[in-house]
Length: 172
Ligand SMILES: [Zn+2]
Image 1 (cartoon, rainbow, N blue to C red):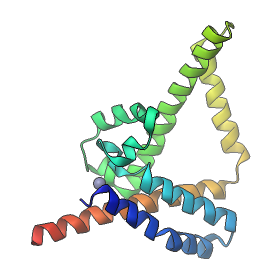
Image 2 (image 1 turned 135 degrees about the vertical axis):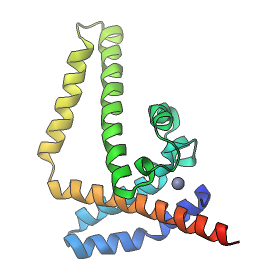
Image 3 (image 1 turned 120 degrees about the horizontal axis):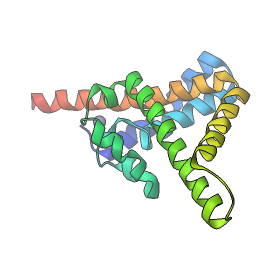
């Protein structure tokens, strides 16, 4: 596979194409910007290589431990992480679950031990879930489509580069 710098360069290089394609498809600047940012996020931090100790993984900084179970569960370069669409869906689902659990735990600890309030972990988890649901309800679905499309394009660029790279290496 190309090294992280190669993947980063490809991600930056396809920014204009992603934006133009989104403009052609949706004809709306905000939607195109969301798609482009999602592609960038996918290429730099949310890509297939989260399945190993990689630059995208390390870019999560103090939160990178959230991806540890993902790495343990998925063999590197399996379809579940490197399939452009399947991998993206699995990462989104995984992240939503792990993020909700983590956020509920942080909120619980804060309300319980810092504010000394009455709260339960389940209660905090329900609040996080309700917030996510409200966000989903209150946001134009086209924006989610664009975000999902952008994430898939970032992953597709990554996996394509991996495949081309190994084909070239095999020939040499
Ligand atoms: Zn890869």
